[in-house]
Every structure is written in C-alpha cells, then in structure tokens.
Image 1 (cartoon, rainbow, N blue to C red):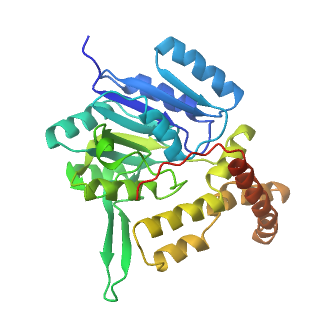
Image 2: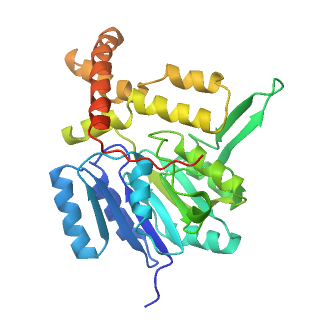
Image 3: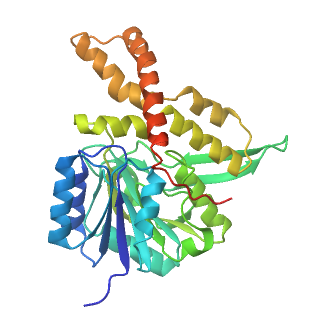
Length: 332
C-alpha cells in the first residue's frame, strides 16, 4: 500500500456534542488514504469512551488531555504527531463532502501551495450557505502612517448554488482553521502556531506569517465542507464553550495580534472590544431568558443575567490559568 500523503488533525472547536457526526463524516466521505490524529481536550466521558473505541477500530492516534485546550494549543499537539507531507487541521464540528480531501491535496501538488482552504459553508442544512470563499488578510499603512489590518471574507451568506459556477482555484490571502491543508515543512520555516493567540483571529496571524515567509495560500472550490456552530447541545458542552469564548481569551488574542504586528488600535479593534461576549449572550444567556419568560424573551433580564455571567466567566478563565494547563509557543 502507498503511504498516505496527508494526516488529518482533528481538534475541539467550541463544544463536544457534534464530534461524533463530524468524525463519521470524515470516514464516510474521504476516499484517498490518510492518517488521522485526534486531539481530545478533556471531552466528557461519553465522547471519551466513543473516541477510544473508534481509535482502536479505525487505527487512528488519539491524544488526550485532562484539561481544556486553546485551539492553537490543540493544533500544536496534533502537529507533533504528523510525519506526512501534508496535514489538514479539522475542527470537530465540520462535515465534509465526497472528494473534499483529494481536491485539497491536488491543489497543493499542482499549485505548489503551502496552504489550501476549501469552499467553506456554515450552518445546517449542510453545504448550502457560504461562510467564505477565500478573502483578504494583510497589513496596510494609512495616510497617518498607522499600520492597520485588512480582513475580508468573500461571499459570506451567499448560497453555494448561486456562486459556485463562478468560482475557480485561485491564490488568496485567507484560509480558516475550520478546515485547512498545510504543507508540513512550512512549520520548519515559521515555527509552531502561536499559542498566545488564545481563541480568535489566529487564522489571520497564520496566513500573514505564511505569506511573509514567501509561501502561497490557495482557495480550492472543488473541496466543499461545512462547519456547524453551536449553541451547546448538552450540559457537558457549556463549561468549555464559556471558556472558549471568554472575554479574557478574546481580549488577550486581540492584544497579541495588535502587538505582534504593530497595529494601530483603530476601529477594527474597538468594534471587537464592544462585542465581547456576544456569542455567550446569543447562544446561552438570551435563550435562558426565553425559557424563564415562557418564550417571550427580555433583553433587560438578559443583560442583568449577563452581569452575573461575566463574573462566572472571569472565574472560569482564572481557574484554568491557575491550573497551569497552558503552555505557550510564540513566534515574534
């Protein structure tokens, strides 16, 4: 048998309740040979048992930690176990389609690309609504000499049906970690992923480092995948979800991005600061008030609950940090 060219590195994104569906999708729709490394960051007992059974049955490598992981921390753990030419980072809430991996590898081989991103969709029904189809991620200098960040995701919210005929393989500036192929040797040039980017914008940092190193990022529309975001579907999801999207992790990530690339703290950053906690508000807090008010909902009540939740959120991030479970690898 030919040795696989690629290793899939599956990592937790924001919850655990979709992980089985995602893993089954990979094995159902991936035709070409592949290795798989599964990074399990403190999943609940039910999923832990399932992953152990699947690892034995399918022969993949399972890496387990007894603490929750930052996304880049999880990816770096998986990266250490990869010895193939390529790897693909895949979040545990992603569903793939037939031929998805073949298309990514073919693009990398034919275009000599260091990074390849697929046509990324969002939500259910799967493979219908576009999350992004390439985009922009670069630093520009304004008239006052300030270094500012340009981020743009193309075609978000469009339907696959309306845009796919016009899409072609093309160089791009942006790929996301929901699902992305990377040439393994690239990390010999740029080092491991920056674990000081705790929970957001790490894909911008990564893609800019790739292009700074003189390598290319490609968009390949022949590969179609979908990520299915929360809300948490089980109680076992809630703790990690709150930690994953905590105010502290978000602020530290934004500050790291700003300082690392010497960026002005302009409207881009200020708008992010104003939206701190928006995921928790929309997926946990407001739905809870709807239950309390028998479906009516109340933003006044939700904001009152949010004040208490912010205190709990600070406690969770403090406890995680105090546990000593975080080890950072930083570049720059």
